[in-house]
Length: 328
Ligand code: NAI
Image (tube, rainbow, N blue to C red; front, side, top):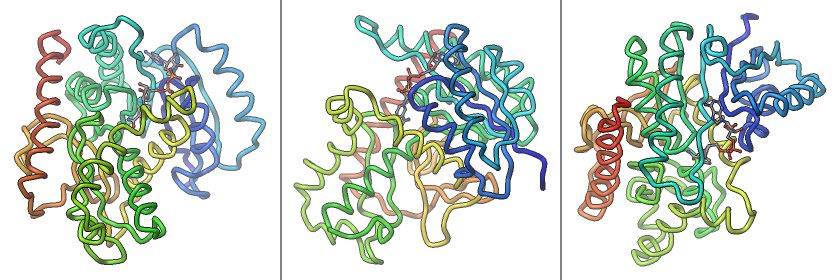
């Protein structure tokens, strides 16, 4: 069809936005035959910079870019949106306590949840990249009672991609041979990258590595702390890779995951694998036509159980904290 898909992006003038917008506009998200209309949200002081980015978007003359609208009112920018990518968030600044961070972001995600509830299209899907992503997604979803909870997800695809990359390097195999990677839990240092169900060239990845110490003491912390390592090296947080993962996650959600594979996505828990019901936690999922299903029947060993439980406990704590703040 030639009707453009309306993609709303928040934090559009930020680092991730500067990479993400061009990838969406050139067709990396929905393919070369689907025109997209970008609807970009920023806070007032960043609108001038965003105007500059829009000039550049126009200067690319992308055949798939049908139009761009910018503004600071979520009620206008989310109007008719089919997909909303919530990237903008308040970063943690010096001296900020965790509670301060949660309430600063709470204010953003309660308002955006309400605006999505009232103005987005009926088929809206919402992907949250801005941190703390899982809990921000929970706040937005809770404040959008008319939108099914299954339409909200938080980004753990970057962690998933990082895990594939680390394993590929360790085993000297191309990333295309690695399937069924899973990130469980929170997009935080407690996340659990699971090799027990991953496959390398059709064989079990944990066995292919054959080194529990490397798995526990090198692989898991390298994946979980990759964001900090990039800040240390680059002097700025990961942006192009976060944008790329945001595209991967949304594309697979809308267009479907590969037949012999699955992806990691933080979605509302139905209690599968003993994960507290109602929190937004990362699972192995298969996706099709904008729907997802948690992969069932995986065996969870004691090592995995401990890791999943620890990350879920952190998410439950975050949920309780935002409940206490009256945000959900
Ligand atoms: P940034 O600070 O460069 O950009 C954030 C932008 O959001 C700023 O332009 C700011 O003006 C805007 N913003 C703030 N409040 C807003 C509001 N109420 N409405 C609309 N826009 C608003 O940050 P960057 O590097 O682009 O990262 C964005 C977020 O993504 C951060 O929270 C970061 O922690 C998170 N992130 C998440 C990852 C993940 O894997 N889930 C990976 C990397 C970053």
